[in-house]
Length: 42
Image (cartoon, rainbow, N blue to C red; front, side):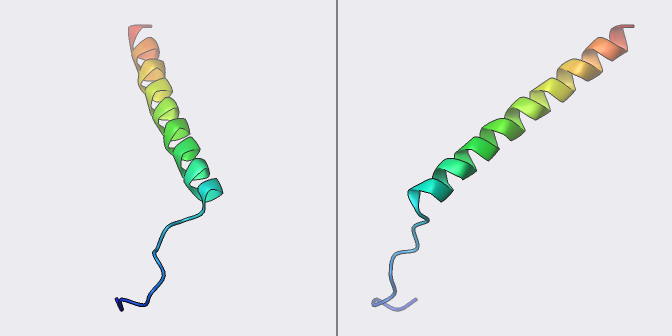
């Protein structure tokens, strides 16, 4: 990296989208665990 390189910061929209995808992934993983637990009880 050169001292003259611009800072590597993604735009706010991209950061918001990444946060939303991370949250959606966590919710999906939690839903899968709950579904497996419910199916295992039957």
